[in-house]
Amino acid sequence: MVSELAGTLTTQKIDTQALRRAFYEPQNTPVPVKFGTSGHRGTLGKGFCALHAKAIAQAVARIHAENNITGPVLVGGDTRLMSRDTAQLCAEVLAGNGISVILPDMPVPTPVFSFEIRSGRAVACLNGTASHNPPQEMGLKYNPSHGGPADSTLTGQIEKYANEYMAHPEQIKTLPLQEARQKGLVRSADVLTPYVEALGKKIDFKKIAASSCKFAVHPLGGTSLPYYKALKEKYGLTNVDIVSEVQDPTFYFIPLDHDGKIRMDPSSAYPMKPLIELVQKGTYGFAGASDPDADRFGCATAKGGLIAPNHALCVMADYLIRHQRVAGATAIGRTLGTTALLDRLAKANNLELDEVNVGFKYFVEGLNKGRYVLAGEESAGMSVSGWTTEKDGMFAVCLLMEIQAAEGDIAELYQRITKEHGLPYYTRVDTPTDAETKKRIKAMKAADFATLTHVAGEKVSRVRDTDGIKVYLEKSWFLVRPSGTENILKIYAETFENEAHLQELIQEAQKILA
Image 1 (cartoon, rainbow, N blue to C red):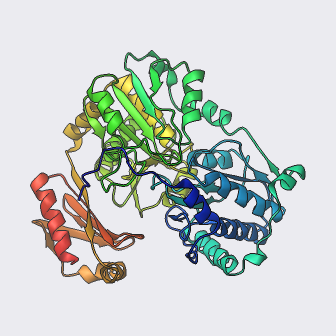
Image 2 (image 1 turned 180 degrees about the vertical axis):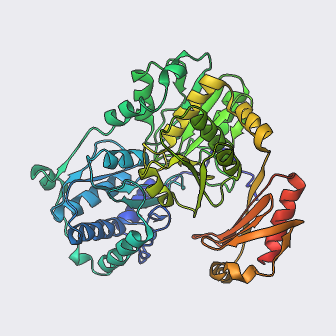
Image 3 (image 1 turned 30 degrees about the vertical axis):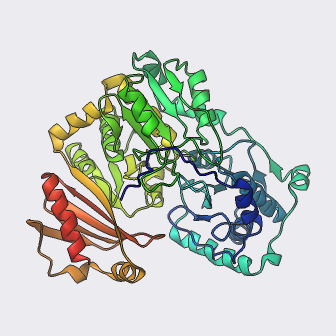
């Protein structure tokens, strides 16, 4: 249900001093370290505090020592309230263990961590971010030598060690930051220029600069701001305006999301409201945004309004295929809940299609091996082989600007694709549930649906149980995944029939898994 406050600016002031105190002196016993798809996250205090940061850093130091991993670790974070403090604490712990640390003087986007590791300037990273979650939250994630998110085996090891240190903090080794700098264990580095120069070899900025279209970019108060400014200056993008340079850890300037919370989500119509209005007024033909750690993208156009991530992924994939922009790639990768229109694009272009569980970590191997023209997820993350092994919202926004400059409005390009390959009807519905139901659905296997032969008038072709339950039909599918953090079931569905059939799929999914 959408809150009546959605789309408005907050009237509640976030008490940053109280959150800062909670970070260093939580009122309740901190929760154990638990890595989800993107590290350990929680509300400042009990959910994420200074001890979490230090324990995770000590766990990483131990893993590096056990596996003879040598070389500098890149440490930083986004523009959240406690990101800098988190990074400095991690740096002190790593230095206390004799590990060389690169601690930039500026906030660092998630894709830049990956870029730096893949460029050989760091062997791993600790990244303080909670993505687009509300500003009261904080998190920390680890990327190993491949530059992408750590796999489940590695994060399980980090959890185990970190929780040991949570119970015995006296075992955590630290070296004060100033002393670590004096000893040469902690140093800064330019993490902006190499990325900006490399992006110029991937994106045709000349096309963007020469376009008659006016482009707007909004960093949503995040790490991408200096990068967009540098790109604008270096490549002469006089027709690209950065429409907000506000950076404030309360993110008060972001319109409230569907549930009345501040959530810096570039794929949601509510936080994106100012950009949608800019294109609707005709001030700009295209408006793009990245979330605070710049790993997700969003865009709106004059002719389409807010562009759904699935639509943008299809347009980008089609463009990259037709222009052979990812040399040697043989497949498209997508997560379970992402549109099957990508499957049709792959088939039409003699490409393979990899369907993976939710989490960008499942694309890392294929991205590293040069397999993917595009790897994408419906939650607005994407990258390509030969670039980062993390999703990159800045790359996506720049690519979409290039496409709009070269071929026209993104919404019209999507319509062309659907005329050729079929129009999908897609939705996601979050259904309230309880812990017992979540546990039951998590335990379900494909064999439990052996007698399920038809759903919504279509024959069942197969059932997948690797990440929730996904039922494949002749021209449709639905997926039910229990949330890892809330008592809700995420129900995704897609059909190439019509809207009524889509609603029938959702109803049937709710009945089957009730």
